[in-house]
Image (tube, rainbow, N blue to C red; front, side, top):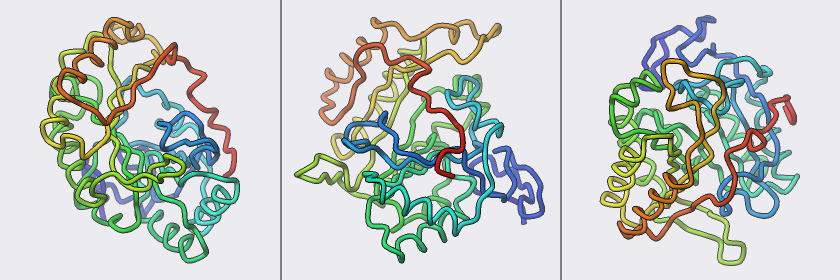
Length: 295
């Protein structure tokens, strides 16, 4: 049966070894499973988020910061049973949560792993960390298993989503997906003692060079639609991961002026529940080594 897990609906028979748009067959592959400190404060806390980076990606943005795993270069094949063990190992190490990064194309294998781990004692929240390009029908398979959704909302303009991600329907699909995420989790809930998020949605937006106008449309949409029933995370960490002769705007980092203008706009809108990045965060040092640690 052809794969239709993501909006690409590439119909590849991954169960028989065919490779989908994501670059993967049904062979569950993980590139890293370790404590990660560089998420939002309410996700990383003081001990780190138990982050599991899956190999492959249904979106494949041209500027991808994690391109070594998105393109399938790094990853170890494991079973759902081993994945359940990894979840429990991360919990034992003190992880604040289990953070599933770019997991869409492996959801059928992840669901039994989560159920097994919960049966065996997994008690920390589960975070679904994705690029936003999701199908509502697929997300519904996770209802009751995921506590926190951490999606991107990358583009408002279909021209930009086509140019950078070959996904003209990105905003349509991502906005519907976020609505489903909010339906599942409801109003954000935090632990009063630690400040850690226990349930809810944080929508991330990575500001790109020369794309301030599109970013303002995204922030306006999010605030007008959800007010303060979600959190937003405004990221300035775009790092050029190569050179783009046909897209010169991507060959530099975001300026302080651009980022500050977006933050000011969010304040003018009335956004109260938000995270911003301060200082020089646009650095490859914020990209973890994909060295199969913990796998």
